Amino acid sequence: MAFIQYETEGQVAILTIDRPKALNALDSAVLKELDAAIDAIDLNEVRCLIITGAGEKSFVAGADIGEMSKLTKAEGEAFGKTGNDVFRKIETLPIPVIAAVNGFALGGGNELAMSCDIRICSENAVFGQPETGLGITPGFGGTQRLARLVSPGYAKQLLYTAANIKAHEALRIGLVNAVYPLEELLPAAKKMAAQIAFNAPIAVRACKKAVNEGLELGMDDAIALEEKIFGDCFETEDQVAGMAFFLKKDKQKGEKHAPYQNK
Ligand code: DAK
Image (cartoon, rainbow, N blue to C red):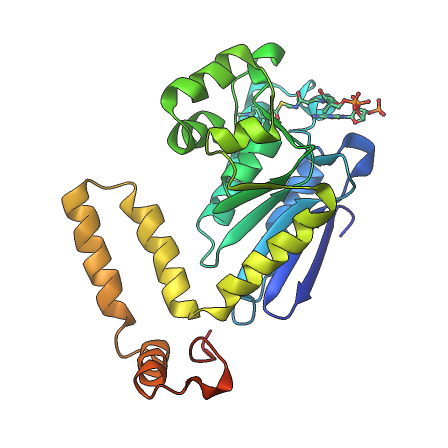
C-alpha cells in the first residue's frame, strides 16, 4: 500500500495514514487503501486497533481539497459515500479502535477520529470542521457524530463558525479523553490498547456492541439489549475461565485475572 502503514505488536495493530505531501489528507486513493486495510485485519488475532497519522504535524488534514474541488455533484456524493462507508466500518468494527491524534484533525480528519471508540491526542493537536468556510457541509458524518459526542450547542458552534480548537479545549468539551506530549502519545495509545487486549475479548467486543447499539435505542430497549448481551457472555470460555480464576484465588502468579485465549 502506498498511503497506509500497518503493523502489529502482539495483539495490538497500528494503522498509520501516510501521505506527507498533503498532511495525510484523504483522497479517494487513501480512502480505498484504508478500506482495504481495515478489511484485512485478522480479527482472530488483533484485539485493539490504533489509528494515527505519519509525521509530527498532522493526523489527517481533512478530505483532499484539490480532488474535491473538481468533483461534480454525482462524484461528490460518491466520494462522500466511500468515506462514510469506511468510517462506519471502523465504528462498527468488532474490536475497539483508538485514534491517536498527532496534530491536525480537520474536517474529514476529525470525522475519522470521531468514528473511533476512543480519542487521545498530542499537545499540538488541532480539531475543527472547516467545511462551511469551503462552501460545503461535513460529509463524513461530522454533523452527526460531533453532536452526539459533545453538546449539540458546542457542535453547532464548531460547525457554523468553522473555527479550530486546540487540544486542551478538545479535552474540556469531551472530544478527547487525554492529552499527551507528542512523544508520549503513541506509547500511551499502545499502553491503553494493551490494557484492553488483556481483558476478555468476547466481553470487550460485547461492551462495544452494547454501547454503540444501545445509544440508538430508548432506555427500555437499551436495557433489554444489555440483558441479552450480558446473557450471551455466559457459557463462553472467557466467562468460565474468568470466574473460575477468581474463585480459585489463583493470584500467586501475580496476574490480575485469567489469561484469555479466545478470539
Ligand atoms: N487537502 C489537500 N491538500 C492539503 C490539505 C487538504 N485538506 N491540507 C493540507 N494540504 C497540503 C497543502 O496544500 C500543502 O501542499 P503544498 O502546497 O505543499 O503542495 C501541504 O499540505 C502543507 O500544507 P500547508 O502548507 O497549508 O501547511 P500549514 O502548516 O501552513 O497549514 C493547515 C496547515 C492544516 C492549517 C492547512 O494546510 C489547512 O488549512 N489545510 C486544509 C484543512 C481543511 O480545510 N481541511 C478540511 C477539508 S474539508 C463530503 C465528504 C467529505 C467532506 C465533505 C463533503 N461529501 C462529498 C459528502 C470533508 C471535507 C473536508 O475534510
